[in-house]
Image (cartoon, rainbow, N blue to C red; front, side, top):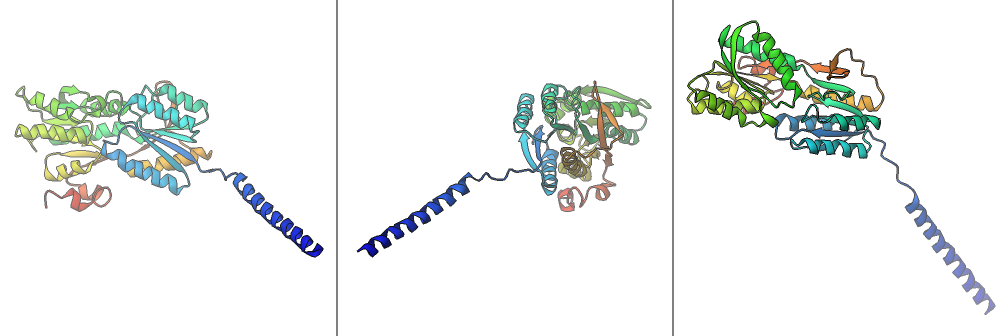
Length: 344
């Protein structure tokens, strides 16, 4: 009997130890803190994905950043300035290492950018400058060269004299002014006259049709139409077609959108400016990671944002026409079967 009691006590004691040990092990596992994610955090605020190029550049940027070990939080402002300001402040709250902004308004973001910089967050103005904000990098295509290429092509096509109209981009996008500066620099060497010009608030593409249609209704026909981008050019050409002038007026744009390239080989749009956006997006991702890692930019060029001289990195644009479409675009930016879809 005594032996049986001793055996029972020992068994209960052993069972208790086993249970306690398991419980302790389980509790220890729960309390062990998870390893913190030490990847570089990048916030990307995009103007609007309604513009074709931004979707392409978003994907390239995210892919390259992830390849370099960074994590990207993408926000789409849908063309709303206040929404973009909220997004920047959201990125600040999330303690991003770098914020990349495709600005809707070149002036309105100044205070939000200042808040980010106060928290030690690096800021890149992508494609479009942000004025008076002292960003850490302005990365873009040479926008004055874009305007020069447009004017040079028009000059080549219509000669040293003629009349043109302009459907310009948003007045809150400072790139528009830089393109205009380059455009007027070339025109100043000719007798070509800008007969009418209008901005397109928010880059609303339909303004291309409205401006062109109203001008044509006056009974005048321009020799050329300079459009702020290919979306505006598409609608300007629609107005020309309705007035039976499709292909008879020199229309130029920029961005080398697929539909613009299709129109060029079809003959309704004469020229677009290709901006190497793949290189731009990849470069932006590389610069973001470098800046977060404390790697010096090593840039010599600067851009005056109205108050500060900020580091400036610019890529070279290329004029694209029917004659060099295959050399510049086909198989590199768009595929041949897509470009020549309507002419095969």
